[in-house]
Amino acid sequence: MPEPLRVAIVGTGGISRYIHIPAYKRMEARGMVKVVALCDTVPEALAAAASQFGVERTFTDYRDAVGRSDIDVVSVATPNAAHEPVSIAALNAGKHVLCEKPLALDHAGALRMLEAARKSGKRTAVHFRYRFIPSALYLKELVETGELGDIYQAFLHYFQAQVHDPHTPARWRQSTADAGGMLGDIGSHILDLAMWILGPIARVHATSKTFTKERSTEGGGRVPVEVDDATSMLVEFASGTMGVLCASGLCQGRGNHQRAEIYGTKGSAIYEIERMDSGGDALQVCFGAAQARTVGLARAPILARHQRTADAPFTEFIEAINADRDAPVTFADAVRVQEVIDAAKLSAATGNWVSLPVPVPALAVA
Ligand SMILES: NC(=O)c1ccc[n+]([C@@H]2O[C@H](COP(=O)([O-])OP(=O)(O)OC[C@H]3O[C@@H](n4cnc5c(N)ncnc54)[C@H](O)[C@@H]3O)[C@@H](O)[C@H]2O)c1
Image 1 (cartoon, rainbow, N blue to C red):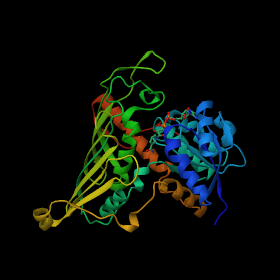
Image 2 (spheres, protein in one colour; image 1 turned 180 degrees about the vertical axis):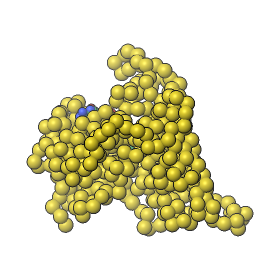
Image 3 (tube, protein in one colour; image 1 turned 180 degrees about the horizontal axis):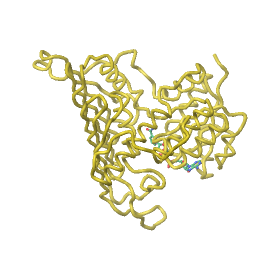
Image 4 (cartoon, rainbow, N blue to C red; image 1 turned 30 degrees about the vertical axis):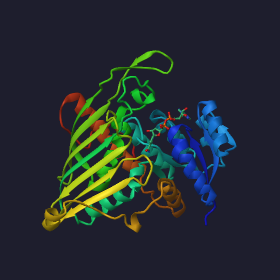
C-alpha cells in the first residue's frame, strides 16, 4: 500500500464534522491517510473538533495550514465564499484539493480554480456525493448503455425545508456575498446529477423566488434575504432531451429529498432518496409495453457493482491521487455546473432563455 497521504481539513462546521473528518479518520484507520491538521476561523469550533477527533495541529488561518510541507491533501469545507481562496492557495502550494460544492461563487471564480489546478498539476475533487449513491449509479448506467433508449424527458428535483420557517435566522447561506441561495446550495447537486447522467445542458429558462424577504440574525438584528428560497428551471440538453429541474428549501416534511424521473424511447426509470445519509435510495424501472401494462414501474435491486460506502467520495479521491488519474468528480465537472447556475440566474433576472456556453470575461485558462 502507498504511504498514507497527509490531510488538512479547512472548516470544521456541519459537513466537516458530519462527513469529512469521520471519513478521513476511517481511512486513517485503514492506513490510507493521516489527518494532520484542522483549520477554522472560530477557535472554539476548532478546539471542539480537534478534541472530538483527536487531531493535534490546529490553525485559525488557512494560509498557515495549506502551505505546510507535512501536508499532501487539503479538504475544503468552509462556506462557499472561501472555497476559491483556500483551494487556490492550496493548489499553488502543491497540494491536491477536494472542495465542497458549489465550487465557487460564480463561473468566473470556478474557472480561476480550474486554472490553478491545471497549473499545479495536482488532482482535484468536488463533494458532489450523490454520484456515489448506488441507485444513481444504476440510473446512469441504464442511460449510458442505451437500455432506456433515446431520452425524451427528465424531471429532477431536490427538496429540503431549510428556509421553510420565516423565523429561522439568516446564516451565511442567505447572503449573496457568501453563498448563492438554494440554487447554488442544492441546485448545484441536482444540476451535477442531471449533466452527469444526461450530458451538457444547451439552454435554460429559470424562475427564482424569495418568500421570506427579511430574517433575524443570531446577533438579534434583521437582514434582507438576498438569495432564492427556490428556483425552477426548464432546460434543454445538448442531446435534445427536455428537462424540468427544481431546487427548493420550502418543502416542509422533506429532510433531504431527491427524485429523478427519466423517460426514454425504450423504458423509464425513477431514482429517489429521502435521507441525508446513504442507504435510503431506490430505483424503479419499466421496460417495454408488457411491463407497463402488467406491472408499471417495478423496484430494481441494488447491484453489487454499484455498492458504495458513504466514504466513497473521499476514498476514491485518495485512490485517484495514488493511481495518478482523475477523481470521479473534478473541478472541471463543477465548472460546468457553475456555468448553468450563472445562466439560470441571468434567466431569472431577465425572463429570457439563456444559451450555453455563457460568454465569460477573457481568462487565461490553460
Ligand atoms: N456535499 C454536501 O452534501 C454538502 C452538505 C452540506 C454542506 N455542504 C457544503 O459544505 C460547506 C460548509 O457548509 P456547512 O454546512 O458545514 O457550514 P457551517 O457554517 O456549518 O461550517 C462552516 C465552517 O467553516 C468555518 N470557516 C468559515 N470561513 C473560514 C475560513 N476562511 N477558513 C477556515 N474556516 C472557515 C466556519 O467557522 C464554520 O465552522 C458549504 O460549501 C456547503 O455548501 C455540502
